[in-house]
Length: 479
Image (cartoon, rainbow, N blue to C red; front, side, top):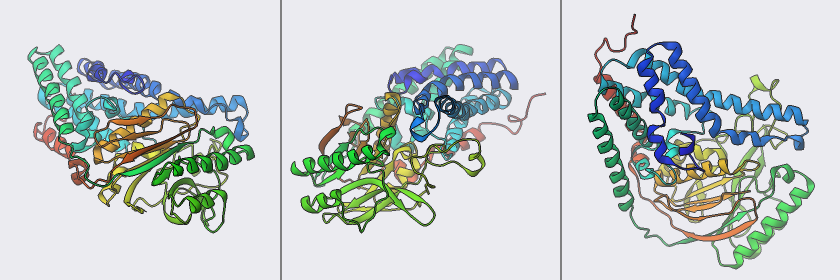
């Protein structure tokens, strides 16, 4: 299953990768064997998919010695892996104990519904990142996410895995069902892509700056000097090409922005008259917000978005963990989450903003599309992590673009920066770990997908179908 995820991206492997776990639940209808199988499967999938967390080490740049730094990075990786594995453990335990053996079609429905339901529940936790749906991005059945978001993709993948198990265990006809079901999903994916409406609005020429200033350097005096210099130079070079707006990464300027203060970047904006979307920080009486600002043609703050989904153990430490885990945040004071109901206004209409970690939360993007977001601005740091994380992050953004039927512009510190159209096609992708500027034309859209209008309607439908397929005896524990 991990090979189905980016950067390997062999999405077809996902259509058989859960079958071994499902098979064990079929054969070992008891709690402990199923729990162990779920644990083993989860450690393999989530552990290998999150190995980029190791790149936190070394943390010597924030004063942590090499050995504690190594232990912290591995400890965080293990914690996140076990949190992911808990999902597969719960699924396997429920399947073995309550589902398998109560009828083939009810079992198939229940297996799909349980996994989709657990992923939906996990997606509202502060540790969400990896979903089975990610196996279909950027080159798989991504168009199906227009229907009911990530649940659509997860449901298709799980259904095919379940049909494989039923075919191996019971009757060959389930192979035919599996082929017909997957073939129908492929045809629907093609049809949905072909039905994407054309762009009719006037194009918006957007510039992107990929600063490539490593996190371990950018809080030093030299790093801050480079940020002022490189982002000002990149902005001026893009403005000279005739772009209408410029986008910078998350935390491009690792300082507290003072709106009333005149500085070299605001002066450059005043001189060029091209609005700038700037990633930086702003202070409040209780702490700091991580923000994306719109600086208008006069260099004044036109609008701002405060990051909502902060990174647990990275941007904040809960009080109950503060005595165990040292602070890993790049700021010295508390980061505060923004209001989930924010509307980010720009001179060209409302935009959807996703700051780093928020790309994994489909409901965060959908809510902003519902309030009039006509294009998506995704900004991230992505340093010091390897290209595995960069590719996963890009895959999340592809899904967000398709779900909302919106153009997406992505600016990162070290890569991968990108421009993605509403069909999920990546129009431009940067090389990682280098300074890059790029200009691309995007379009504002007001179309509404089924997912934008109704949200995750598929999960309750699956739940109702599962419930009606069982008798009152079906969910009783055996023995």
